[in-house]
Length: 508
Image (tube, rainbow, N blue to C red; front, side, top):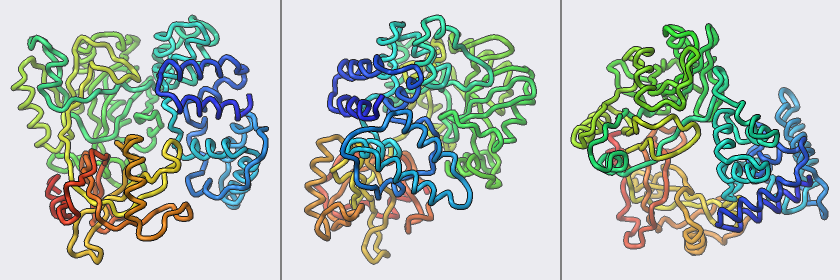
């Protein structure tokens, strides 16, 4: 298959909001795929390379050769080119990678170059998430969608499930939970408060639910098969070698084969959680910080699969296997007042919030459903937009990623930067802010400069999950998971929050 065909499909999918039309476009392309191309095409249709790392980033694909006049690249040629780049290392590898980029992109048309740049930088915005791709696979392979979804969850990827789907329903059914092979973790939906979450799980107010403390750590899935232990992250990256203390805890448990779901968390001497970045740095490198595992679910134990068992059975098995000091703190109740009190205590202890769980629900690997509902305090600040970056992918041609600043009288500019975000922006907002920020630019706006500096006049309301220490920004702090709520035309920059207010806002 030519890359041009796939790019045309991606463009068509991005151009429609109709889920049915997206599935139809993907299915039509999949129906023309050769067996040898299937996994690559499925991955590309989902907007991702097969390689986890290629050594390329925005800078590596910012200066490209002139595009080709006619399409000639096949998807397998592209895959092989990125595979070769991923294998480059050592002296001379940087130049070799640049040469490889020139060779690959020089054969691509303008449309193909734009798509390749987007996929390299993770900016393919076409609305074709895994769930939509799975629908297309099921349609073309003529197998039940539920079977494709379950296989994708248990195999850890839609790509693996697609290969099985074209071999038939039996091949899909053969993909089961396998100790030592990571599966996609179950995810939680969100609610604004505990009362809303309780009402959703127990409309009549009598159903007992489990309420777990939501720890601000690293999601871990731990597999043990005898002496062999595997620890993976939420994205299924293997971090076993970086967390020997987690391996030690896993080997201390009484069962020989199990799969646990939980969090790894760095704690202070008095048992309070350390900043998220301390935990994150420990999983990235040996920073000297010790992490402690806390588990909240058990998916398999000594030959017994628990994925389809109700939550109450999984928790009973978890309690029998894992000692209390390595279990997430939990309350089981039907009383909204008790649930509220537990949530308040959890947040006061320094944790993120709580997760309310339906005790009758199975473990829905890879899904974000209504059986688990997270509740976290939401912080908001009124900040000033200091600069903006040109967008890419779906946001190509728009001024998109905004630089956020708080008032700071000690700064020569009167503001101090706290981070960047494009999260929460609708197409209408992107169009509005492109026009607005063109007016506020301190110099003529063109594409010669990736960052456009602005007069600090526009106030924006930002929601965020917390603060973390930062050496990148002069204020010493940065916002975590910042997202745009709305632009505040009713406020002037002199009414924006100060850096002191920012620190006080989250108790930093």
